[in-house]
Amino acid sequence: MNRRNLSIAAIGTVAVLAAATLGVTSLSSAAETEMTVPSTAAEHTAEAAKYDQEARDLDAKAAKHTSLAGQYKTRGSGGSKQATTLASLANHCERIAKAYRRAATEAREMAKMHREMAAAG
Image 1 (cartoon, rainbow, N blue to C red):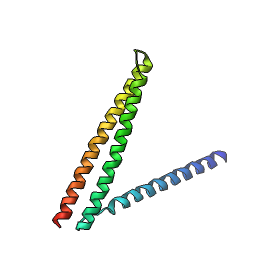
Image 2: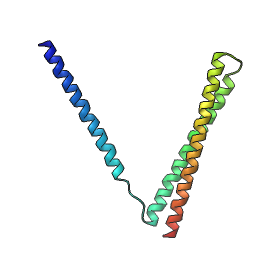
Image 3: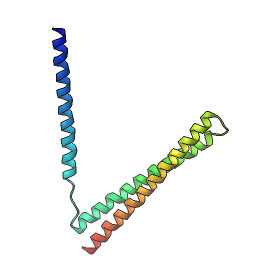
Image 4: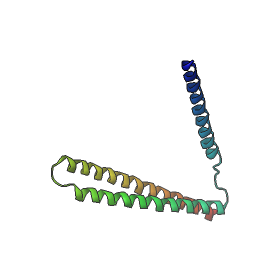
């Protein structure tokens, strides 16, 4: 009897997890289908503003990681294992900052294109 109850509980757990997975998949699919391509000048202007904000957010993240890289560099000196680890962390933060700066540049380019499309009418 105990084994039967355990089996029923396991089947119930699997069913709940499967239902939750389907629910999350449905939500993400619904969110993706709600995206629309701007077609009016006002919509392009609004889209440009979103990209401008995204660029500012990405620049802030890049600055934070650049700062962290500097902090790791100042803490790690000498040839110890900890210094090597801190140097690796600094390099990681520098790579992340570079990626954020590149993404911010792309966001600004997207904003520029949307402003141009808004101006073209």
